[in-house]
View 1 (cartoon, rainbow, N blue to C red):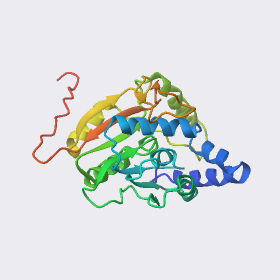
View 2 (cartoon, helix red, strand yellow):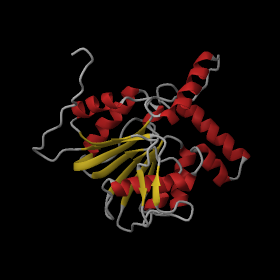
View 3 (tube, rainbow, N blue to C red):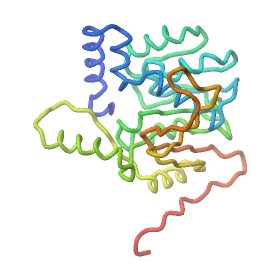
View 4 (cartoon, one colour):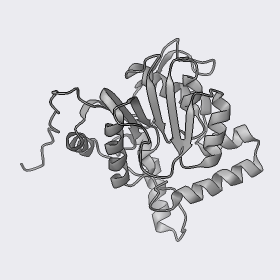
Length: 260
């Protein structure tokens, strides 16, 4: 859905089509890839594992139709901002969540509209998978500025090393061979490059986890009737970065070039 390749406009058209041809809840679920509740539970569980507190300030970039927000609404003291470029999804997320203090914004620029140093967690689920590398890097710059010292960025990504991601790439190759003008941009990232990005941006890498492994730990507090406690694969890989405390060193990327 890169802003630069006009995919946002085509996605808005797709959402409009779905809403015109299906009941709203089904249309919204299809628009964000299905499994509305399941994915929301997974995302909530990942935040609990990686620093979520009852009073955290969470910025959910690419919030879509509110899968994560709908899970986080259980925390009375939690502060939340969700942004997405598609107005219909933002409207649904606001209504679905039902928290007047939760903020939702239609945001079409690659920015994090938060006062510097105030966010505890900035999350990008299935966002960098649809952006040019330069756009994702710019988002990480903005997230760094928005975070308080010790705050974390959590994002999912596609990588060639995960076999379940390979069919996505094959579909992209088929699209590239076709004469179709419209398509869904899917971008793969390499974890060695992400380590270089982290060093350049001044982040420390907390974890990088393979998406086909059971990296989601759903406990009793994040489970639902559909998703019982247990461990689940996310599908996409996960990267967790932390903004250092004042005076804390940034870890070097430790990437060894072949032949060096």
